[in-house]
Image 1 (tube, rainbow, N blue to C red):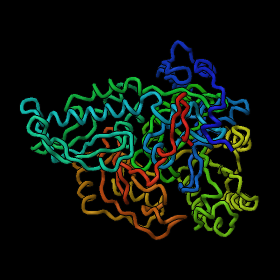
Image 2: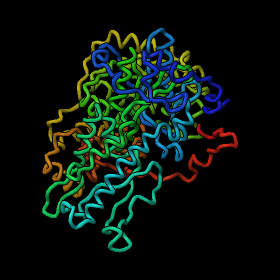
Image 3: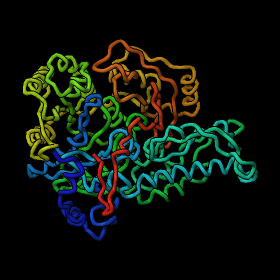
Image 4: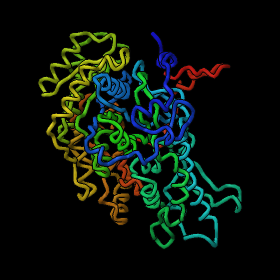
Length: 556
C-alpha cells in the first residue's frame, strides 16, 4: 500500500492558472508562488454571490490516536460533490510545523483525498506562518524597546506584560524564559516565554479579519499590559499595528492549490482549536462562497472544540451560517472510546464499539443545539466489519440522523458519492435555522457555564483564585461582552484527557483566563493546555528526509 506522499507524487498536477480558470479567476490577477501555488486577491470576494453559496461544515467525534480523518473526509466530500456535476471548493486551514514535525506528520489529507503539492503545503507553503510570526514578534520587540527607552516610553510596567514571542515549532524549553540579560544596553530583565505560532493572537486576528484595514484596527486592540499608573496599554498605543499589518499584506490573501483530482482548494490561516478558534479565515470562506456553489470546510478538533467556536465566534463575527454539518466518526475511534486499546482497534469488537457510541451520541446532541441539519460520515478502514458499520448506522437511525460509510482515502471522490448526494440534498432543502449557543451580552461566567454544561456535559464550573482575578480584569477592561474561546483538551469532552466516551458528573476547572482583545474573545483555560507544545519521545521529524534530487519522504 502506497503512503500519502507516494500517492501524491504520482498525481499529475495542473498549472495553477488552469485551476484558477475553473473558478473564473483571471491568471493575470494571481500572485504566483511557482507553478502550483498562488494567492487570490481579495477583490474576488463577492458578497452577493455568497448569499447563494452553500457552506458545509465538517467536524468529528472526540479525536483519538486511532484516527478519524476529518481533513481527508472534507477533501473527499468536495471531490465527490464535483463528481456530481456541482461546483465545489474545499477550504482548509494551513498546517503548523509543530504537529508536522511532532506527533501527526503531514496534515493535508490522505490517500486519494489530498491537497497538493502536499510537501510545500506542509512545510513553508507561501510564508503565511512566517509573516504571522514576524508581525507577532515585531510587537514583542517594540514592547521591550519601549520599556528600555527612558525618553520615548509610555510608562509600561514590565511586570504586567502578558505578550510573549512565538515560533512555529514545538519547543518546550522556550515556554518560560528570561529576556534582557547582559547589562543596561541589552534591555530590562523580565520573565516571558514563547508560544507556538498557531496559538498567536495575531493568527487568530488574521483569521477573523475582513480586509487589511479591519486587520490593522483589530491588531491595534491587542492588550499588552498596564502602565505604572494602572492604565491599560494596547498595541495601538505603541503605534505598531500599522507595521504589523504591513508585514501581513500578502498573508491576508487566501492560497489557491489543487486536490488529487485537480479540483480547486483554498487553504488559509491556521489557529489551533484548543487555544483559539480552530478554523480557516473568514476571508478564505467568503472567497470559496464567492467562487463556487458548495464550500466544504472543517473545524477541528472535535465538534465540542472547533465546531462550537466556528458557530459562536466565527459565525458570530462574520454572519456566515453552514447549511449542513458532517460529523466524522470511525469504527476504530469509537472502539477506543469504548475502552479498546490501540492493539485491539483493528479486531472486530461490538461490545467496545457499542460502549463507545456514547461519544458519537453526545456530539450529535451538540449539533442539535445549533439547529443545523447534519449527517454522519463513517470513514471506513479496511479492518472494519460489516456488523460494526451496521451498528453505527442503526444507532444514528435511532437518533434520527443519516449515516454513510465512505472510503475517500482509497477511492477519492468516488468513495463518497453517497455522502455527497445526501449533503447536497440536505443543503438545498434544509429549513433549519442556525441558533448561537449563547448571547454575547451575557456575563462571562454564564457563557462559560453554558458551553461547559450543554456541549461538554459538565455539572459545574470551578474557578481557581487566579481565574477569579483574571475575570475581574476582563470586567475592568470592559471586555466581558466578547465571546469566549475555551481552551480544553481535544481528547475528552471533559478537561481530563483520560475520560473517554461520554463522561458524566464532572466539574470543569478554569485555572486562568487570557485576553485576546485583538481577535475579539477571552480565553478561559482549563486542564493542562499550553500554548507551546513539546515534542514526543519519537517525533515525526525522525521519519522525514530528503534525497539529492530534492525528493522528500516521511510526510505521511
